[in-house]
Image (tube, rainbow, N blue to C red; front, side):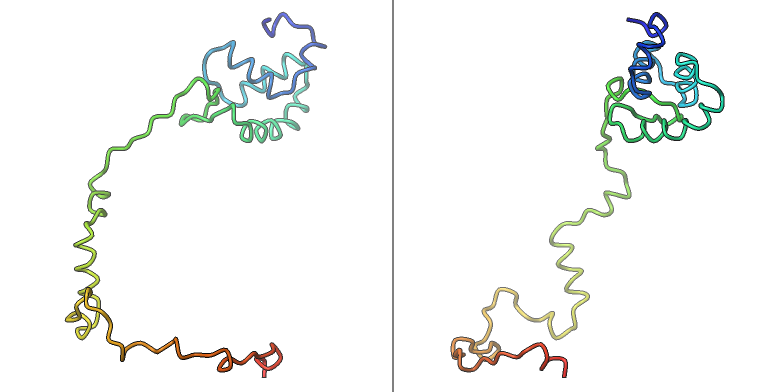
Length: 151
């Protein structure tokens, strides 16, 4: 049923968001939030003062309701009327950001101190370089209370 053929009692049974949805479906075009709410106020016979007092709440309701979408031109429409198009084409700036693993390794080598650049990444570590963790016993561990840490 069309909104303009409904009684005031029927219209009052709908929320403002539901009325906005019906208006956008009937009009089949996006509209500014003020135009939508003016139509709602006209249907419900609301005064200018009521319009001014309720427009901000209406705006909040539209922004939080997933059925609605604000378009680039500032008008509102139903999300169902619009499809999302993803632009997956890479720009020149983004292409500059993509580096191969080899380029990254070269940059890391350039940043490392000279003495590390000569090290072979695939060479096994010397036993002298590592602490012998297996020799630790539970007896070598000490439990310290928080109070002792503060001191």
